[in-house]
Amino acid sequence: MTTQKSYQITPQKPISSGFSKDSTAAEVLEGIDLTGKTAIVTGGYSGIGIETTRALADRGAVVIVPARSVDKAETSLKGIPNVEIETLDLMDPGSIDAFADRFLESERPLDILINNAGIMTPPLMRDARGYESQFATNHLGHFQLTARLWPALKQADGARVVTVSSAAHMYGGIDFDDPNFETREYNKGLAYAQSKSANALFTAGLDKRGYAHHIRAFAVHPGGIKTDLFRYISEAEAGGGGITDFKTEEQGAATSVWCATDPQLNNRGGVYCADADIAETASSMDDMPNAVFEHALDPHLAERLWELSEDLTGVAFSGGSR
Image (cartoon, rainbow, N blue to C red; front, side, top):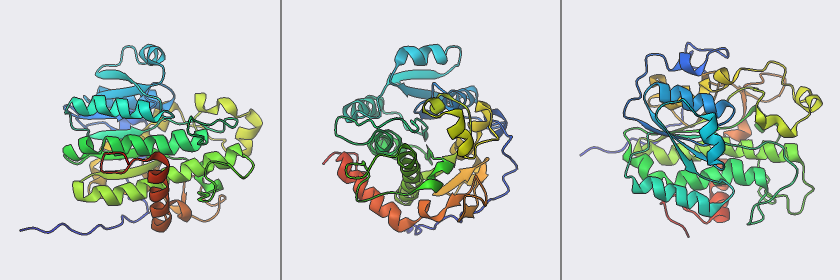
């Protein structure tokens, strides 16, 4: 009789991966065969999502791309092999459940889930539940999606869940008393920072829960990339945010696919990654722009967020609803 080894936190420090900020998704995946693997990439039809989808599909994976606009996704992904397009709106719990049900009915194991979709600094918008749109889309939607797909992730042989965070987490953590800006004045930058901190903390909580099932989780800072994500940000705001060295979309997708596939990360997880490596930690925004702040790694905050997320979504990680 064998006993399950207890969960060990992976050190948050670089492992000298051999890649850099200039590496592309195709370079990171060179020599890796994903034939027979199934991946889901939310937002996989725009920005770095297209290049994430392309890189995985080119290496043989079947890539399912959920989209709010199927027509737009079909146009964007035309010519990329091994792609299936499905309907999904991360701000609509019913849409998330319907997508997950359709996938589970296929009885396919899910090898890779990349929670890539997101919105950044829009004016105040709320979903039907009254939840602030960035927290609802960037975090709660992906929390519910991952929970509902949990049986398929457990079915795979060593699944990985990658959630796209951002250096913007440095600007603020979770306001547990008012995460949806119901009593405080709405600040679009703080709301984005909160959602990106949530992405990193979700990764910490998920990796701990997935460990026994050989599911590992990673948070990713893709770098600054000029995509449609910037539609609510002026040139002055972009410069004021310290983004001066933009990556290409191919470079921006590199860390996501590295976390999703690289064997160097076997037996590792729960870490925040950037530039196709595990990131450094920092306590000042002036130190290292691609580092991670401790508040986005704190296991106690991760547990508080987990409880809050289950309460707000009504979805527990058994795959059911409460």
